[in-house]
Every structure is written in structure tokens, then in C-alpha cells.
View (cartoon, rainbow, N blue to C red):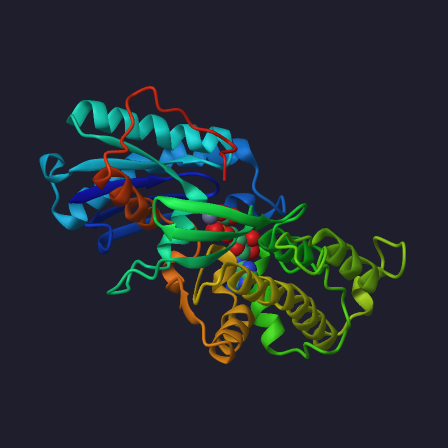
Length: 339
Ligand code: KG4
Ligand code: ZN
């Protein structure tokens, strides 16, 4: 089963060709970092236009690179949401056009569920049932994945997503956009115990998250209580490294704690982790240690599939297609989807 998949939910245009949901023939990703960097965040209109400019070229390149002709494609999978509505519409319209003109089945895919399934891409066995921690720029959620088509939300952020907190802290420290990778790098040279930032737990049994208080704590640490400017120049390079490490530790502590709480609450012994923040080195190492201590199997999404990519859309699209859950040309994009 050969699937051509399209992902355009945010600021990455991606096209993949994947066999049987696992064998990745090609995974092309055009990032838009340069276009959004000067604004410190993704500008929806700019993102949509960039998807329009790139998508046709990537589809052509994916076919050329893999030597695939349209008759060899079995289905077209596409992210239908959640995400930026203009960006999603570009991908969904392109997918519908290809499905119609090539006479192929169309499969609309939930982006967050695809992140959850992406951890299994290069495993030789199915890891389900599992607790999935999905940590990205737009979402921070815990799911119980009974199988790729049976996914239940256990908890999610009530304000900022973890990746959003990384991006905002990078903006406070003037480190550029997206913030996650640079804060991760600076944290590696810092002391995670240097500053005691708050850990918001929202109750002993809660699987929900909150990161907006932490972001404000970083802001006031930099500029002084109640101040929003003027403090940055007082920080040395080492102060910034320590701040990045202490902030990262506050985020990671809560993510690790709640993931293991979900494991205990649901009586499961496997954890999978996906989404852009799953690339974070402190999260990867602390989760590995905590899961090893608790006798829990941990599957981290391979680094190249942590940030947005069409391979994960093909992976979940494969299961949906196999179960007959295809869509017709009335498929629409949706900025928010039931999670
Ligand atoms: O999954 P993704 O590509 O897009 C969304 O669906 O949001 O995630 C992007 C997010 C950004 O907020 C970025 O700063 C964060 O993932 N990120 C990281 C790292 N790499 C990317 N956060 C922390 N550490 C990283 N190494
Ligand atoms: Zn994502």
C-alpha cells in the first residue's frame, strides 16, 4: 500500500511517499523559519502563501525522487486539522485535486493523532496500548492509544503549549525563533538547579498542564518583579545558559511526572512521545531514566519525525485506509478537531 501524504498544518510544507505505513521512500520538508523569524512567531497569511508556492514542487520532487508514477499511488492522505485554517486548506485542496484527477482514495488525518502514531514508525512491532505524550508548538497532551484508530485524550494544556513556552522564553532572551532548539542547546551548558522556577501541577491527580505562569516567572526573573523590559543586558552568557537549563528542567519535570502518573492511572507499561518538543534532549534523557526506573517501555519518535512531517500523516493514513475510513471530496479542513 503506497501512500502519498501531505502536511501543511502550520509552518512546514511536507510531502512523503510511504509504503505500508512504515517504509519511508521519501519525506520532503520545506521549513518557513526564515519567513517568520523576524515576527517571533508564525504569521498565518505568510504561512499559507508559502505552502501554495512550495506544495506542487514538493509533490513533483517526491514522485521524481522515488521514481513513482501516479498509477502506483494507492491513496492520498492529508492533514485535515487541527492547525492554521488557511494553511490546512492549501493541503486539503491539493490532496482533493490529486485524489480526483488521479482517481485515488482520499484520507483525512488528525495531525495530533498522527504525532502519537509516529513513534511506531521504525519499530518492528506495535507498541500499543500505550500512553502518548504529544508535545509541540500548539499542543501538550496525554493520550491513551489503544491502537492507531482508538485514541483517547487524558489531559492537555489549559493555556500555553510546552513548545510555545520554549518559543516565548527564547523571545524573552532574544535567542531567535523557533526557540526550542536554541534553548535546548543553551540549556546543555547551564545548571538546571540554578534558578527555582515554579512547577504547575493543577492537582495531584490532574493530567492537565499549564505553562503560562512559568513563562511569566522567566520574564520577571530577567527584568525584575512586575517589569517587562530593561533586564536582558544584565545577564551574562552563563546566566542565560543557567536560565535556559532551569526553565527546561521546570517544563521537563512536569511532563515526566504527569506521563508517569498517566501510566499508573491507566495501568499501562508503554510510553510513546511525539511532537516537536520530543526532540528536546533533557526531556529525552529524563524520560528514559524515569521509565527505566518504573519498568516502563519508552519509544521516542525518531528525531527526523518529531517536528511536523508528512510521513506521520502517511503512517496514520495507512491504518485509516486499511479500515475503510476514507473521505470523499466533501472533506474540509478544520482548525480545531475533537481530540
Ligand atoms: O510539532 P511541531 O513541529 O509543530 C507543531 O505542531 O506545533 O513543534 C514545533 C515546536 C516549536 O515550539 C519548537 O520550538 C519546539 O517544537 N521544538 C523544541 C525542540 N525542537 C523543536 N522544543 C524544545 N527542544 C527542542 N529541541
Ligand atoms: Zn505538530
